[in-house]
Amino acid sequence: MPPADEMKTKLVAAGVSDAAAAGLVDIGEKYRSQVQALIKGDDEAGWKLFNTIKAESDAYIATQPETDQTAYNAFVEKTKANFQAYEETSVAESA
Image (cartoon, rainbow, N blue to C red; front, side):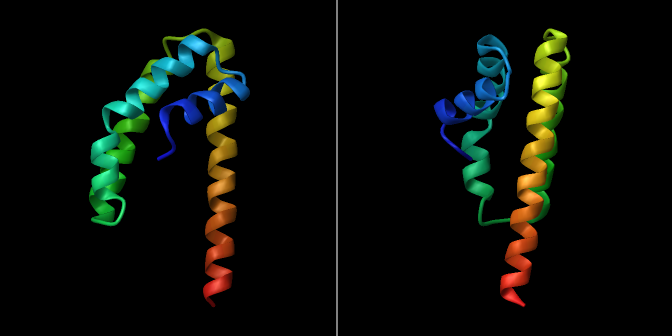
């Protein structure tokens, strides 16, 4: 999990307003210690925590202006694509 200031910078660079980015970062920070504890641990618990954070983030962003919602959704899709590309590269390298 990147540092809070780095995540906020990435969100703002993606077009999310400073206020909305701060709110999203606050949600992530609330769970930081749990995420750190699960990084090398239980995959099932990790996915459960990820889904909790995602649900809170989605609920929060739904209360923000449409421009923030659009920018956030684009940021999430880009992040997913980057992660999938990383996973595919990792699998190919280990084969």
